[in-house]
Each structure stands twice: as C-alpha cells, then as structure tokens.
Amino acid sequence: MTFAATLSASLAAVGVLLFLLRPRWRLSMAKHPSLQGHARIARWLGGRVPYYQYDEAHIFASDDAPPAIVERRRSAFDRLADLFHSRAPETIRSTDALATGVSDLQFTTAYRVPFQYRAYVNRRLKIGSLVQDTSGVLVTDLDGNPAYDLAGSYGVNVFGYDFYKECVDAGIERVRDLGPLLGAYHPVVADNVRRLKAISGLDEVSFHMSGTEAVMQAVRLARFHTGRSHLVRFCGAYHGWWDDVQPGVGTPGPARSVYTLKDLDEASLEVLRTRRDIACVLVNPLQALHPNAAASTDGSLVDSGRRASFDREWYTAWLQDLRRVCSERRIPLILDEVFVGFRVAYGGAQEYFGIAADLVTYGKTLGGGLPVGVLCGRSDLMKRFKDDRPADICFARGTFNSHPYVMGAMNEFLRRLDDSQLRRSYVDIDARWNERAAALNARLEAERLPVRFANLASIWSVCYTRPSRYNWMFQYYLRAEGLALAWIGTGRLIFSHDYSDRDFQAVADRIVAAARAMDAGGWWWHAPHLTNAAIRRRVLREMLAVRVRGAIRSRPHDPARSDREDRREARTAAPYGRGAHRETGR
Ligand SMILES: Cc1ncc(COP(=O)(O)O)c(C=O)c1O
Image (cartoon, rainbow, N blue to C red; front, side):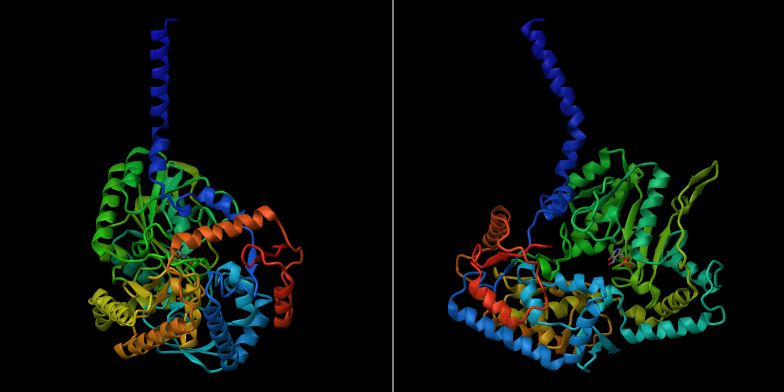
C-alpha cells in the first residue's frame, strides 16, 4: 500500500471513529462540570472521603482566626449550648433516647453540620426533634417552647397546619363507614379523579403511597410505552430516593439507565434531539431556584458557595424549549410536581410556567395531611398492558394505594381548593413573597450582615455573601430565636401561605436578631485573603493528608465521652493537618 493510500485509510478510520463517538461527545458536553453532574465519579470519590474531626483546640479556628476571635466564638458557642439545654431539657433528653432506636434520626443528626465539626457540635449543641403541638404558624416542643415553623413539613404544609387537621378530620368522617378497607374503592375516589383530571388537564390518574412511588411509576410507564431505556433528569434535581432518580452519592449501587444533564442548556436539548434511547425527561420545577445544584444541606455548607435565585421568565423559556424538543422526538415529558404542585398555583407548575406535560406527579400536600403520591397522565401512557400482547405488562400495585382515609382527606383538600378565598391567595403569590424577601434582604444589607434570601413562591434558600467556614452555625442562631428549621437547616426554608404580615414581621425580626448575634459571636470574621475557593482547597488538602498519612488512632468515636475527656485528648493528641485528627472505625 502506498503512503497516500495508508494515509487516506487512516483518515477515513479516524473519521468513522469520530462519527461513532459523536453521541458520546454530545453527552459529555451536556453534563454539568460539578460532581453532581457526574454521578459515577461522585460516587467513587464519595467512597474515598475519609472521616476526620477538628479537635477542641482547632474547632473554632479552622479558618486561622486570631485568638481573640476564637475566644469570642468559644464563649458564644457555650452560651448557645447553655441556652438550648436550659430551655428544652425534656425535648433534648427524649430526642437522645429516641435516637438510639431510630436510624433516620441518627442520620439527620449526623448530617446537620459539616462532618469535621459534627462530633463536637452534636455533643454540646443539642437540638430536640420532638414536638407536641402545632397551632397557626407555630410549633411547640415538649418543654412548651413555641417556634415559628420554617420547616413546612418537607413542603406538605402549604395552607397551615390547622387546615390539614381539618382536612384529616373531615376526610375520615366522610369515609368512616367504610373504614380501612383496601382493594375496593370508596366512592369519594371518583370525585378525586374527576377533580385531578380537571386540574392536571390529563386523562387518567393512579394513586400511590408516596411521591417516590408516583415518580417511579411515571418512569416505568414511559419505558414501557417507548421501549427505550434511559431516563433523563437534570443535575441536582430531587425526585425521591429510588436508585434511578438518585444516581451518585446516596445510592449504594450504580444506576445505569439514567442520564444526568445540565439544566437550562442547549447542549442538553441537543442530546434529546439526537439520542434514540431516551424514554422520558423528568423535571422538578423547584430546580428553577437553584439550577444544576441540589438543595444544599447545612451539612455540606463548607464555604459560602451556595447560590440561589429565581428567574421565572428564563425558566419558563427553558421548559418551553424542553416541551418542544420532547414533542418533536416523541419523548414523554414528566413534570414532577410533588413539591411545587398546589403551592405555586392552583394548577401547579403546569399553570405557573404555562406548559403542558405528558405525565405529572403530585404528592405531599395533596394528601390533605396524609401520605400520598399521585400520577396523572395521558391515557396512552398510563395503560399498564398491551391489548395485542397479553404478557407484556407494566405491573404496579401497592397495598395501601387509594386508602379510604387518604382519599377522604384528599377529597376535603381538593374541595377546599375551590374556595374562592383560597383561590385568590394564589393571585399575588410571587409579589407577596418576593416583597417579603426583598424587605428582609434590604434590612440585612443595611446592617452589613452577610446573609441573603432567595425566593420561589414561599420556598426560600439562604445564601451567604462573605466567604466563611462557619455559616452552618447560623441555623443554631435561628433556632435560638425561636425559628423551627428542617434538618437540612438554612438550605431550604418553607413558609406556609397562612403567614400573615404580622407573623412574617416577627420572623423577619428574629432572623435579623439571629444574624446580629451570629456576627457578634465572631463567626463571620474572615481573613482578607479568604475566598470560597481557598476554603475548598484547604478542606481538600486536609482530606488528602488524612488519607495519605493514615490513622493516627484506631479507637472508634464514642459519643458518650465527657467534655473533660475531650479536652484532655485535645491537649495530648498531636494536631494533624492544623487540628484535624482522624477517627477510624466508620
Ligand atoms: C420533587 C419531588 N419528587 C419526589 C419526592 C418524593 O416524595 P416522597 O418523599 O413522598 O416519597 C419529593 C420529596 O421531597 C420531591 O420533592
């Protein structure tokens, strides 16, 4: 073969190779550069992050603060610890006792602050997780302390707890004669189906026991009817906790049939336009508040890099683009409204953003205070069997689906939605909550406090404007002011719509007071050269140092150790990587 022939054969081979690699290349371009955009790498790295903790000598100085600031922080911390203990002894005692037998409580307690601070903070700054009473926008702990509820029951609480108490009572009353019979339906189900079809604009409904299950069924049906394998979700979006919608950290095994693509990005549309294996596109509209990132927990608040803001027009345009491409490619578009449904508008995200999905999931608040997941969809997509192939089935059951009590409470919820006053409350929802957030932000700015709030229709996220390693402390100051937060802390605050201007004013005053106290405690002191990138580099260096140099000690962490033992240890243990020492056995 001549040189020219060899060259052209090689070029042709390269050309074919590049052509074959094009889909892979497109997929790579549509991945978000963050770890959340790369599930496999995130899982691999996640399994290699070593546990270590700051000892007492360094816990308040992990940003190299000068001794005066460290002392200020230490005494502020002690004061907070005393306050929590003296104010809620019974709540804390009962929570500790409960935690030994409740794995969920152990998990949420462990992930409340970045793990380097966890052992020290959890031993001293105890938080109770038991409450006995709700009334209006207040929740009351076992010691009788009322707090304004900013946790919102994971988003269930849209209209106020009293509303749901009434829904549950009235709902149970409506189905009382049937009781808890399963399998056959209470007639109230027909009314629910009628109302849900009208609200969603879709043909059929299926009832499930949680939002996770409703999403799972939506995806299964899309795969069943398209015969395609892959689900597309967007970076950072939460859709429940089954494997395919939560690839990466948090799921033990690898998820294989899911593409995690960039939100609000043309490259993702290009993937949808060109791949043939996409069974459905799954969208959680709440991502509009923090595109391409998960709702941040304070446990991952290592710096001030959390970002949140909401641009309704931009996100609407994106959803419209998605809708167009999905229609062109006959890819079912699933709108996961488990969180935002019935909160952002009467007709949920479809109405709010002005798009029509092929399948829509609801949950949370729709149960009227009881657990539920609902899928509404086009009838061709909802069908679970094929007329011409009797053994080709998309099986879905669930013992408690359509439970009469749940259906009764849902019915009451849906009927009350027709109330004109309730319907009117949706009209100025953006204006009301945006104004509240803006007024609070203006106060914080005027006082040069480095906290800001972003809002999407009464769902808030706290951002921090100055680089700091101690933003996670803010959740404790908010709690000290009588504000109740979910375990993820300041990453998400959820207001119910019964917050009056007066209630909100009280919350705003307390937030400002908490920020002032945090500032006075020295937590937001920062060296002029400190940046978020520098903080992250430093944490990375600590982790590498711990991994490379291995275990200093081999004794597992014992939460029952006394403060005195801790202090003795801090004196005797050689500081490791500026105060980071490793504990093994985890
Ligand atoms: C958008 C979304 N989808 C699904 C789920 C899962 O719902 P559930 O917790 O009822 O299983 C959630 C829960 O927070 C959610 O926010």
